[in-house]
Image 1 (cartoon, rainbow, N blue to C red):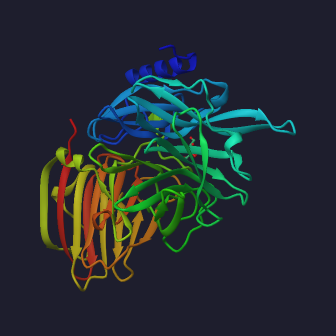
Image 2: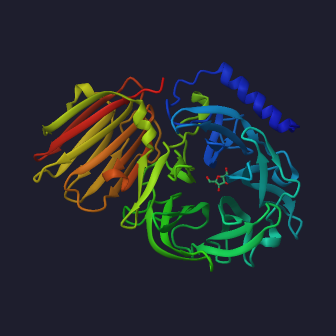
Image 3: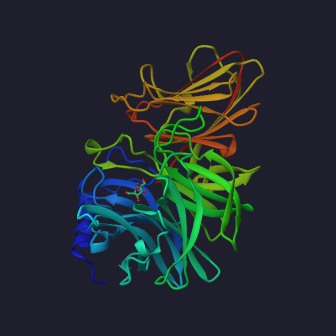
Length: 491
Ligand code: FRU
């Protein structure tokens, strides 16, 4: 296939960078930038029995720049194979970037939906950036942009809709149609999720507004995803400019899910429950896919826009979360690490009904930075449980459970950071914690904590030197601790 100079250069640059660089800080089983910068996961999909993940990518620098789509694939969500860059901003309608989007398998082909960003003069002669929806069709390695691009532009946007914020199409197939939802800013300057459909990729029809922000839950809603799960419909969005609400939503860029009822004929969606998707310090722009064995799997960018922890000195910036399987129980969205991770567990260590002390003590057999560890804390008379991970006498990341308030506190103040970035966050846990249950997945510089079988999740990065790997615990009052810990080995 003929490819543009921009795409050829990006592919060559990536290949050379991978050959010459050593990346000391890369995770073992989480996707991270091959080189340069990555943000949102894109095109998470199954094609010819393999799972593909694309991502927002600026290969040339460890900071954001003209967006390409990088590409990897996997058979099991744990071991990923690098593929050449899939899209470069090489057309007049996407010359400022190929922004986020999604993918489906359709008639034997792999169809990518993305937002093209272009520069144009507005009616007053001022140069403006506009966002429009585009398609590329491929075979799992090479992708050709449609001659009809852009397929959805100003002609199909409802009155009051804004072409400056019109991005991130998430597509799915239903009956004879391909649908997509896409983020937009409406009349009131806050987010709205628009829906489109087509029978043939080329002619698109505006279906309507699926949901609106109405200046609740932030402003612009980025990266929508919409799907049916366990008899309910879920809309996931990543709002910008959120306001904190107790410990339920934090300020800035967040991610929320809205569960509700959707009428497939009228396309009417009625919101029922709105919750934070992940409470951590580093989580944004998640996207889901449906596997051929009917699992709904979510992956997100394990970072956020307000700061970066990895950059020039590391040679790369940006990682993804572990893929997580979604289920619904009593209206709440549960997330649990994909079961494939269990195939890579080794060196099991268990501790049973251990009576924790009131002073911190190290648990010698539990050290590590690449692990899958389940911790259960019980006891009627304790008020707080504290755990330090990636810890030695000086540095640590602290996980605190305040039982009196049913509140969890994550603190990386002493994790070796030299930057004044968000370092602590509190979360009110749901339900009654008779036994607190945390599954902690660490992969060198990341920590993902799944509470109570995934009812709530907390995802954050730490930048503690890798040889600092102790686990310490203490309690206030009498608590019994059960731990089951494995190392993860993907060699
Ligand atoms: C979300 C986002 C998307 C956009 C992309 C650009 O993180 O802002 O809305 O498509 O990143 O890289």
